[in-house]
Image 1: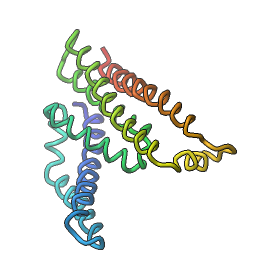
Image 2 (image 1 turned 135 degrees about the vertical axis):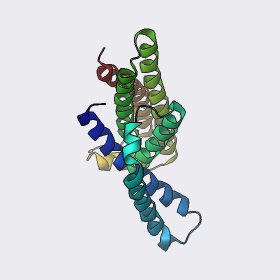
Image 3 (image 1 turned 90 degrees about the horizontal axis):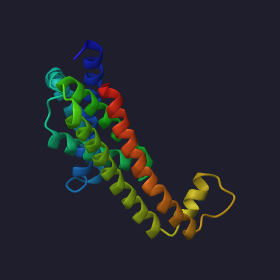
Image 4 (image 1 turned 30 degrees about the vertical axis):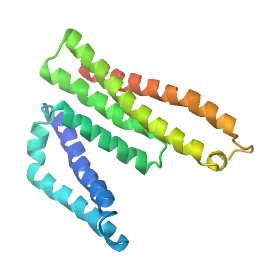
Length: 199
């Protein structure tokens, strides 16, 4: 791995680890500690992540393209959950983890020297996997939106519309927007993987 790429990968990991531990500590503490201590636990997780970076970041960066795919899949799903939560259930922002995953897979294939059908299958695989994850996010958002009687009003306010968003309009938006989002995620993840692969 060349120096510039190693630096970028290292910065990404250095941010990812504390952020993941911050949210893990926050969410896990909700069930076990009084409310006033939740943010103490959350920032404790953040601090632990920084400490882990100090000791292990160099090794993680050096092995960035050697981690097992099941482990990476779990990390991807977890990051997608964080993204979904941070952006309050708006699934379009879950395109971002898919784009990063495509970039990672493309560079990993390049470094491993994978060619031909094996590379093509892996690129299709990351596209399908990312599409499947965002499909779950979109389905969750659709379920919540259809159960909430004020969703149409909230959308109207958010977009400063001069008309009310009816339930029929909401159903149409879900029916069209959901599959479009899934297709966009597939092509985004697979397309970026092909570009990063560069062969």
